[in-house]
Length: 132
Ligand code: DAT
Ligand code: MG
Image (cartoon, rainbow, N blue to C red; front, side, top):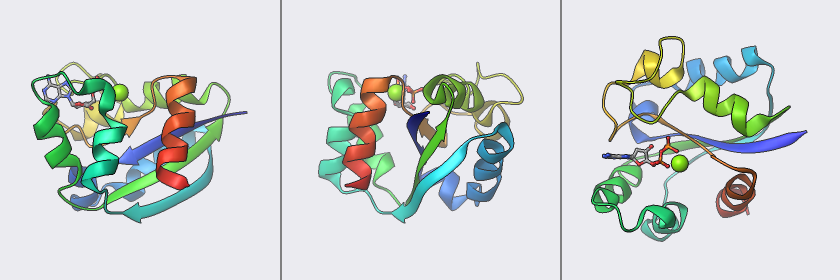
């Protein structure tokens, strides 16, 4: 079984969407391995998003992700990374299909309420970053 890292971002947490998001993963058939509410430090945020350092929105992204508590999770299941990304929807909520988390709950790319690892390598890296 694969594991993936998923995180409800500060906007999703503040809006009280944690329960509904957890329910979607459970309904899909994922198994919850670990979860916690946490405040991300600037250092952790910069490491988590280091592959986006050259992007014009990097500073805004870091400020946003440290702006309040997040809900970090490890989910386990078959093809966990791919299946989690399907539940989440594409990066820009304007393009995300109804029925996906971003499609149903978000409207702006800069506050798209949830993160999910995009590869096996990043899932391992992010689980270590957030849970060790
Ligand atoms: P994803 O979160 O779908 O894996 P990503 O890794 O390319 O997308 O980008 C990480 C986050 O950065 C994304 O969830 C929201 C933010 N972001 C991406 N593109 C952006 C843009 N054009 N303007 C503002 N924020 C953006
Ligand atoms: Mg990504």
